[in-house]
Image 1: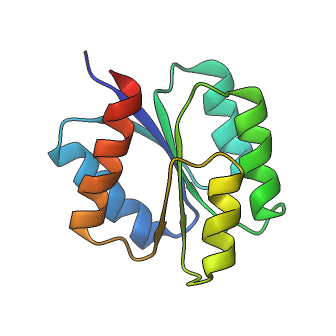
Image 2: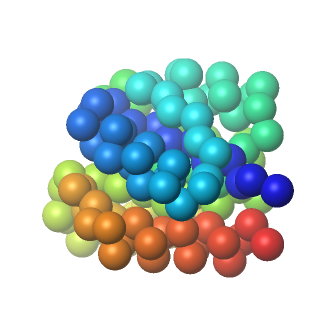
Image 3: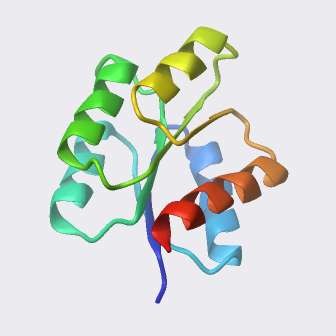
Length: 122
C-alpha cells in the first residue's frame, strides 16, 4: 500500500524538489503551501507522515509543531528549516519531531528522512 506524506512548505522551489524525490521513490504525497491548508489535509485525509517547514511565518514555528503533535500524536513529523540554528533543531526534537534537516535538503538526507518515516509507517 502506498504511504502518503504531507509536505507543508511555502517555498515553491523546495516544494518541487521534495515532490520530485517522493514521486521517484513511489510515495504518495499532498502539499500545502501554508499551515492552514496543511491542517485541512490532516483533518480530511489519511496522512502517514508530515514534512514540516519551520520557515513559515504564519505562527510561531514550534507552536505549529506542538499543535500538530497534540492533535496527531501517532503521525511522525520531520522538520526542515533554512536556519542553521542548533537550538531550533533541539527544540524541534524536544517538541516531538522525529528528524530535522537544514534546507536545502540533499538527496542523501531525503533518503534518511524516508528511513525515519519507514520506521514509523511499518
